[in-house]
Length: 595
Image 1 (cartoon, helix red, strand yellow):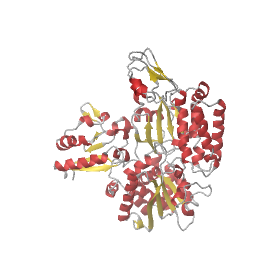
Image 2 (cartoon, helix red, strand yellow):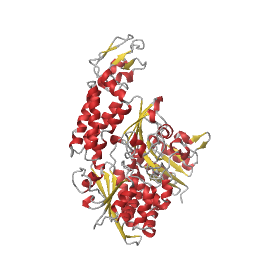
Image 3 (cartoon, rainbow, N blue to C red):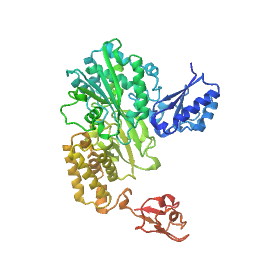
Image 4 (spheres, helix red, strand yellow):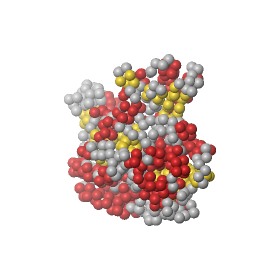
């Protein structure tokens, strides 16, 4: 029996900040202090507050240490773990309240969150099956196999109102019910862990922090539809997730929770991992299945739908990681419990990867229907540097931008679609007043052009033409006719592309045109970028009244574009200036501006 547990984040974010070295230093220092029998160090999954990593929580006190360094370990061990004195300088400031420590759940970041898919992340050791079992793990599978028929399992999932969390929002129970009655010698369950949206890391964090919930959920899905084999398609760029998922699969087999005759029910189910090479298009379910089969990841025409003819031409159910992560809790706590959260048509919670110009970047799970204002200003802590909120991009390259005027919008599937956006897998990138919306649209189009598989002409050629138009506008060579042609081309690509990649690729352009058309016009008519981002439309000037003639700017200019004598105002040769911004960063007097 340990008197204290030290939980250290072992997710990708904190690992990149040296959390592994912190764990090693902790274990070494604890051993040297003779505390090995009293203190247990646990490597967990993501706590959510990625901006504060590496993160460490000490229980039973619940002390939340942030931005911990290896050199801090001796002090934490000798002061806190040995003498019982909390190292206040390392505490997350929002947990400190006068002379007491506030619960992490009372902080602004966590207060409005409801963790269902993330319930075990940051709580258990993901590489120990016994810890998952201690948190009611595999009880949902046992309940399904011993108490419910497959039809009853599907009905529970249907009644819960769970919709696919991968982007499309198709009702999960409906998808399962389409596949279950199809007669076939072999059926498959596929987990889509090919998380490709820029700035998205929800699925990765679930696999890293709670891999057993995916194993359990896929077995439940297999029982419900009559499948005996499962595949998890996860990108090879997620080595920690792959490692922990494989450990979970091996442990489940060893415990008899995968394989033959699970719980003596006569039900057989096994699963394996397939690594993806990072192609964004393989997030589309038919392209993903084509890749698992060993072929180039290209989408297939539908119908036939995967429920009838999917992986290896057999009936297949495919859901993403977050969708599966909800299943065990829905079975254990009931459909009504899950349906009590969220909105009328969007039940439950949604995990978002919060990034961009926001104080608290990280992972959040909130009930559907939470407003964008609550996410940005309360949970996210607002915009750094006193800047104004301008927009939020949801759904990555497939989504759109929500402007500041709609910050009180309730986030759910239908509201986002009505604005020309989409939920996507859950990336939410916050932008401030210094963001150029034309440049943002161009950024996502560049990504889509690179990731198009090239199978259909509307996507392969159409997105390239869109990008050329945007590039022309951001360089100051656009016309008003180009803006009209952008909209026309967007509608054509949406209507004629083969798969979801091409059908949603124009969304960033259409949404920015809808809400920020004035910026497009400024680029075209005034030949100016209002946000000061597009280099071709900028020029740098020295304000003579503010310039002290210190020569600091001239010394850092890589092209020698700045001239002047000491203690006299300098000037910039606009023809030689490459607009790198080094002079602005160096000037201490605010004497250089970009216009």
